[in-house]
Length: 139
Image (cartoon, rainbow, N blue to C red; front, side, top):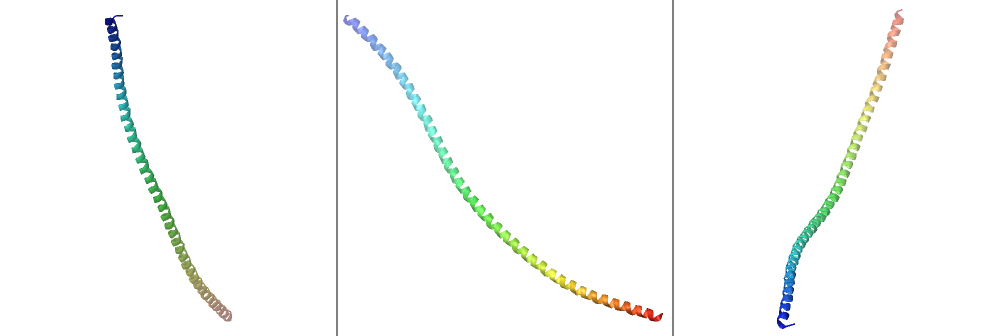
């Protein structure tokens, strides 16, 4: 092979290698763009995950506050219920005492009225007997 043919052959091979390198360079540029896109999307995903973590932290804090509030309300409700029950019981006791007192007073009055009624019954009976005796004596 002579020198000129060798040079042509080498130029042809260099041309092919150059074309392949250019193609690889183009593909490498595309890969770089794809990687840059993936990085951008990964950054978005990281931001979303960070946002979710912050949201979860806020929700956990809110849940703790809510549970504390619930416990406080339950304790407060229990205390108020105890107070109401105690107050009702005391009011009922006082009412019962007043009723007992009134019943005693009424019992005393009924007794007095019964004695008065018995006295009147005797007086009526005595008058009746006197009138009956007068009526028999006139006959």
